[in-house]
Image 1 (spheres, rainbow, N blue to C red):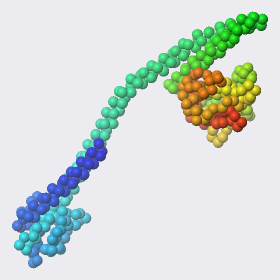
Image 2 (cartoon, helix red, strand yellow):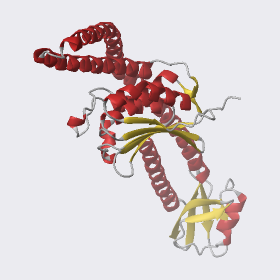
Image 3 (cartoon, one colour):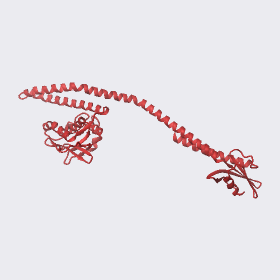
Image 4 (cartoon, one colour):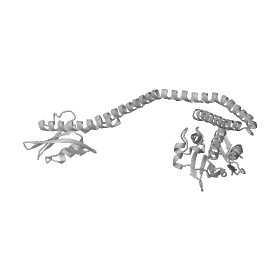
Length: 380
């Protein structure tokens, strides 16, 4: 629209100048004195002995025309009063008739044209922007409503599934306890115990998926109250919680947190704990028996790093972006990577806290996942 307005203004200006040249040429060719000049045009009659000009011609312009005498062959303009005045010369019977156009009329029309086109263009742009805004909102509204319905469905379904899954998990664990006593001398009971162990594992995995879905829905659409979180203490708590699980898999979980000086960030403690828990759990699942998983909290400048270091199968750094998408799985299916939001949820949590997730190779093999968070105010 702006290009069209500028192009129209330039075209109009060129057309006006062409009309001006035609007008002064006609005036000069038909003039026989300097009295009856057409409106907006002045005349000058120049001979070797006398020079006459229209009385209304500006003095500075009249002086410039008279100063040239009758030697004006080929002249098409005069300069006076810091303006260029279009002119045309016609010589007949030893007399030069000069027609000069009042360029101030054209400048006024040009100024009015620019103002009107600028106003029309601004109004057009505002109207187009308003139309686009209204049309965009109208077009996006159904999508927003659908996404809100989807989020609400996920949140409601996750919330409703948590209780029956908890009951199912509890019953599976009770059934396992009853079978443990019978499995000592009964091969059939031992086989049933193996199946029940798998059932306990599957119900726990299902509960994790449901919890992840509920937390993801809350993160996207709910403002959770933030506070000061001692990352050192939080990481140590996660280590204590997962130590029995790590020992069951033959992995040693090592707490490298300092604990002497609180390392504080601003955030939601439950969400941060969930992200650290997910990384440590993932590291344990991908570690070989007899290796260690280290959890370390350090500060670097204005950032707090929570490093989870394993010596397992490792991960291709280039593959992390794919693993950060929901329900993605690693290439090592035998390692038991969980089916859930996993790394995608961790990435979402850390970004909502103004941080980022970094991944690097561990020296000697394995992977190091680092939660990098902006440091908060330290308590007194």
